[in-house]
Amino acid sequence: MLNVNNLVKKAFNGEILKNLSFIAKRGEITAIIGPSGSGKTTLLRCLAQLTPISSGNVQFSGQDLKELSHGEIGLVFQNFHLFPHLTILDNLILAPVSQGIPREEVVQKAHHLLKQFSLNGKEKRFPGEISGGQKQRIAIARALMLDPPLLLFDEPTSALDPEMVKEVGEIISSLQDSKRVIILVTHEVRLAQQIANRVLFLDHGVLLDNVESKEFFSTDSTKLSKRAQKFLSNIS
Image (cartoon, rainbow, N blue to C red; front, side, top):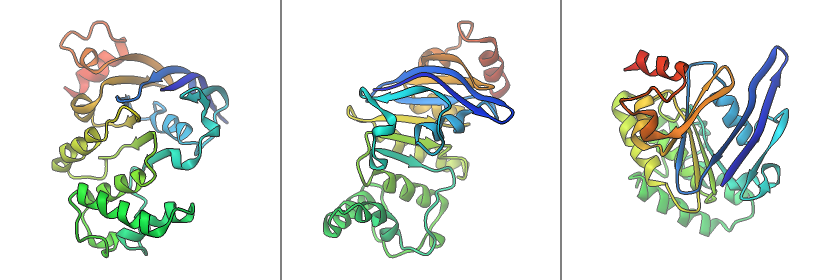
């Protein structure tokens, strides 16, 4: 379980995140949505330990997030961030091999993931030789190489054609596991509706709604914040 307590992130011009508190459970997908500039990606970067929080604390299974190794946190970036000069296989094995895991074991794991994501035969290709959808699947596979119990997605469909959104959503959904917490930041509201168990709605760094997905996307949205109701009405 991921427990976020009174998280604050300050910047030179004020607070980006304001006293956020929520719980994300293992075995579930928690979607973070909201308008542009609401602090979604900043929150994810705090959880990924890419940017420090200003105050508050975050615990994962009772352990301070700062004490987790980078291998315990998997992050799938918005624009893939694959190394263009490395083959697909080398992109997958770079981190685990650098952490001392035997190469033979790592290569075997990489081939297993490539097969799982229908990417057989792509291991010797370079990122520039495959499609956007395939790059995203590679990015997800790379994040899974160390079996992280905390898996974070930052706008995983923003660089994809609309027809690929459903496919990536199905892949993310397939990664649900009783031992794993999945947090998804997305502007694709339909993706959140398709795969999320719980929805967090942010606006101007404030957590306004924290409800089950079926409640957030219910035809009766009167229980939600006025801002969330307006947000949903503008995209429906």
